[in-house]
Image 1 (spheres, chains in turn orange, cyan):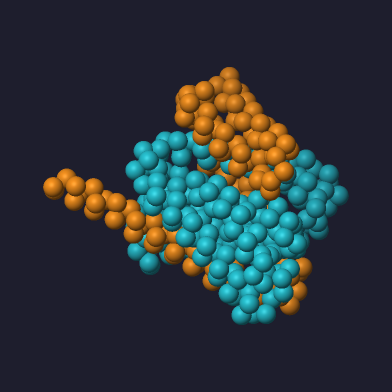
Image 2: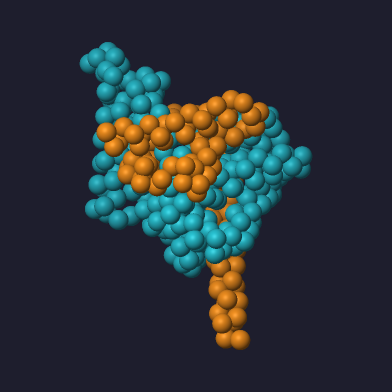
Length: 124
Length: 230
């Protein structure tokens, strides 16, 4: 019964996300509305954490498997790239690496700065 | 045989689970990032499809029962984020600026590299949303006049790449703060990267999940501006 209730809540939030996607003319998918909605519901205790936790953790753990069919599709679609494949691959690899580095470093630098400031305040 | 497999209700799902299972086992035994369960799983599925003569469309109609869970699973990324709320409250600016820096890096490196390699406008806007979650990326590409099916391809490649590289990049370039790791992985490689961040830890996973949402929304706006430049 527990899983039915938890699954029901999660699918319900997904469904409301789908409705929002249908109503709002923006390229934002149901899942993104769903995360925001779920977060707000948890925050306001409309949905208590314990009411979704077990099933949510299971679904998140299963997530990588859900990408396998799409990855199979990619290999099927590689032919579509034709002679452009090298250019596309190069852009993809280089920019992905740089994004990871840049966002990681900026976040890390600012976190350390915040921490130093807080420690500085304590010393005063 | 082929006929039976094509009509089977369970073949697609079982093949996907088995492929991923073998990939996960290899990963555990060999401990090399390149033995990524998603990558190995997909390669094994393709091998089996080629051997049995089942075509991709048939496989996909069976495997859709797995893909069906993707939206509910995405919704559930709110749970780790909610658990790490205190971190979000402690470093809101660092997290927000880190994601923004990543989105700008993504758009500007794609602009620079596309110009450098002489790609036309359609190819350029096809690549622009490559670091965000598939469903948003496809919408952006379509709106800007890109090749939608190719956008889906580069988004998945970006995700798998991020999933494979995340551990090594964080180690090599000394990104050691769990919050920063999560932001880096989620901003660069959306939900597929996030599944790796979840393995690294609760904080990494939570921040990566948050980055999917924020970078996705920022890219919707940013890509429409950057689309004018080439």
